[in-house]
Image (spheres, one colour):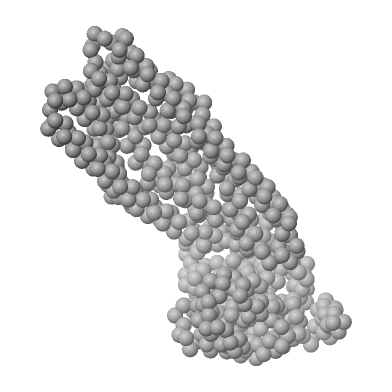
Length: 595
């Protein structure tokens, strides 16, 4: 339940804007500078062409209609139509270029954040809901890329629009321009009162959306557990509560969004009416023509759009800053498990393993293993047994450097694994963990995951070694049968056999089987034992199994408990000792007899 409570805790996005995060985006912007500059140029052209309309109107009303110059009216009308078409065409190219830049930025940021996430240690994923990570890679990146591609261009374009509009208005009448600017205090007051709240509402909605996404992600991954424990009603209640908060936050955003158009429209109408009154009553000596007044009214109505857009962009900038902080927090996450500066490729090993006074804990000051000394000769099979949580899986996890030890050292053929590159270390290990993870794709592709350049013959041979070939051939398309994510259309035993074939295919020097046969029925297990025996020949192996019958023939059995190795010996030696292993074996036999 502790983990589920995190979905009711909003990820804080209301943080002070940090210009450093925005500056860190320079590489992404510069990589796409050509389409961005192109988009900026087309935006400016579209704005200029669009602003010519009122000027043309003023010319027609004041000059050509009084002179009854039909030819000039037609020419200006055609010119107006042409510039309007050019404005639309420029807007199209601007949209296309900025979209192109935006998608490239999304691509580059996601590649960088995904590449970094793959290097993070298991500790990072153990302490965070996967949905929260997913939100950062998908939702936050989308928003940031949109700002970097559209927002930055729009800041320049809207600022230039204000300049252009002011230029046209001042060229027509400085006094009437002051009438238009008289509405500026009202707009500023609106922005002060509303825009800050609107930004906070958007931030709150984003946080609630993050919670919903995270909960959906975990719920889908854990659907079997949900149904097995009849949690559907409870989970639905949790989800409805999260959706209720999301809906409430979204409606608050919608409320502020709906306030904008009428407020701006009313300010525009007020300014237009004020403009007409001032032009007629107070500026009569100026003798403003109808064309000038109409053109000024048109420019006046357009004047507020860029101001509102700049205010919206400011909100987007603040939100983008919050998103960038979360994105860069992830990208700055310390890589605990990495190659040392002097790391060298591990040569081909024979499989000699030495744990020398090793101490390890997942949390500092809370050791799981203390002063472990373990030695395995090349080709020797070592079984690890003991109570749940004693550290059996931990022993093999630190051998693969999924976690780094706090004290002591682990040697492979005399080489300290901390001074070996991770790639050369893990490439010589075949690992089958408790969770039989199946990727979306074909059965063939899932097995080939253990050796990407493997031939079809090698894949089939690996499957035959673990007795998976027969059931694979019985599927709809044999090795080309499509399996769903996590292999939901396969039985638990079938998933493990495919994962086992994947491990066999990698042809490792050291083999690690963590509960490798836990989901295989006894009959299938008997078939696979011969394959396992063939695989273990000439390889150092570490086997964790809950069925003690599967490890009786191992060269050595270690009983792990109380942060260390409590017993060590062959099956026969430990049974004669009548200690902890004997008690465990006896209890399991009695349980089997009861069944």
